[in-house]
Image (tube, rainbow, N blue to C red; front, side):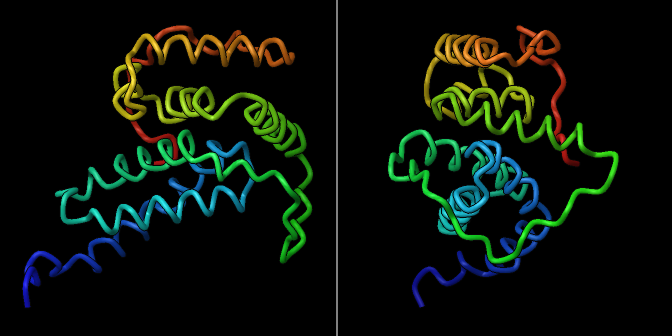
Length: 184
């Protein structure tokens, strides 16, 4: 069969990738969509489908997460069909939070609500910069724009968040030198 050798091991490698990184990718999608879980799941699943289709081009497992994250950002920024804001029925009611976590939960909810108030391109810049700790150059590569555009989107997004009362005094206005995954 034509091209069969190229697909050997693809399913196993992709399954291993999914098992190891799905939680991290879903958290990124959740931040990118402003905390709307059904939209985040759709975004992650569409990006993973595209990753699976491109698996033969990705080359190595380490590149798969970056490819999937880039795909999620591009889908979010360019696909206006994902702007649906209607209510979504929940299959299960959310569990009650445990005592002592109220402040953390309130902060997380407030951050997601504030992220929803800014345009997707600005939201993507903030998520990639402060959650994934990518440099401005890396973000520009993901978004397919210049580092200057990344800087201006970040500045506009932070200004919008400040205008809404979110304190960004602990957020540095410079590139973050260290790299790494916050959920590793």
